[in-house]
Length: 287
Image (tube, rainbow, N blue to C red; front, side, top):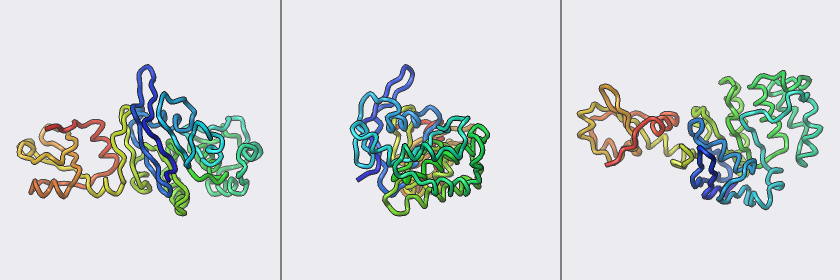
């Protein structure tokens, strides 16, 4: 069974459309959800959580239909969106008083543990927190009711690298028992390089691919060649290409197969960010 299953999700606005989005989040895994700003990540997450109404498609969370069992589902998920959900004039130490009325599994001890870990003063108002502190507060609150699933929309944005590393460790610990899962939207792809098991890539409202992260990093590569070499290439492994003044860079889907057919061409390893940039700024290769 999957922690999240999205099938053929559609949502249409005047100038944007989600087109048949389908992907899943297996139990015990972290799925990194990537794409440029405006690609449809936040819209997908809001539809997943029933914050916005979808036009069509089926959504199952923790084995339950979001339309039929929304309240039960939301008891068991922790959500961190890109904006803090707590009112600016709220004193942080008062948050547990109403959160325990919302979540029956809320534990003050867990909440204050993370406040201390993140060095967040409980006697301050939310508006006195920086953006990064607000994000850490949201993460503390999301973890305090012992969820089975975390849904994170840019949860590490606004945090310095050391704090991001600390939070990524918390996320890794969260999924260790194979019963917890995370859907993590982020434009900081280096974070996903470290922790994600799968990558779901969306562009212009369409799902480009859903693949194991290790597969992408092990098999995909960037080949660099002159224009003369490009004309002679066996191109069956080429996905995208970018043409410069003197050379051409190509994104290849299988480094080993590409090199077997194109001796002498340099192929470098690739990062998630480079893959994303190729799809956004490159050209699709067609025979």
